[in-house]
Image: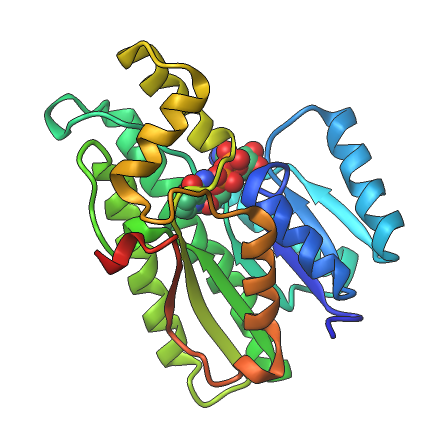
Length: 260
Ligand code: NAD
């Protein structure tokens, strides 16, 4: 379905981004990986996906908090693949603290990585998508793009902002073959959430399993984690022809979190 197309998935060396990159590669898309990690491991990851799915892969180490590095990555994508057809803005970080104790540099980093980076990649990817009259922009927001949680001011602000950016991008491309949508996951057990599990375990003297249950039971009615594979399949659907009129949606996959 995506044969001959190229997908950039930011933050795809781990977690949800990796799950989405694998799902798009399974549909035949070439993958430009991005994110931090051990160079040898990333090399293996790229070769593994290329071999498993018979697609071309590449990697760029742009720090998504730095617009100049994002520009360099997009130039690299143009040179290597002729440009980006599917843009998945997934890189993101979390920090938990109340507003009056929130470290200023963490606020700035979260806004830069979780929100502004999607503006930069989108502004650089859109001219080609519009010119060829086909493109897919998928912004990994969060259920925190729809509702708030105490302690997550920067994250919730960035994710609400990302849902807003998604709507505007969708409107500006509404009469083209380019669509823009947001995906809003609940808890997914990735390194980002394991940190919150660890914090909960040590604060309340709980085992890892008990801390997972405690975290889920507060917010996620299914009491089960969403998986990167499930999110990958949602991204594949948003890339399909059947989703051509899904525009500006903030689509939750959250075990019922936002239904409460
Ligand atoms: P993760 O920590 O497993 O992966 C984050 C990825 O982003 C990694 O590849 C990391 O290297 C990369 N990254 C971090 N900072 C970067 C930077 N400055 N430049 C480039 N890459 C950078 O996290 P995850 O849980 O897979 O999260 C992926 C996205 O999904 C994030 O936007 C997150 O907010 C969102 N999300 C996660 C959950 C969850 O429960 N895990 C829920 C909703 C939304």
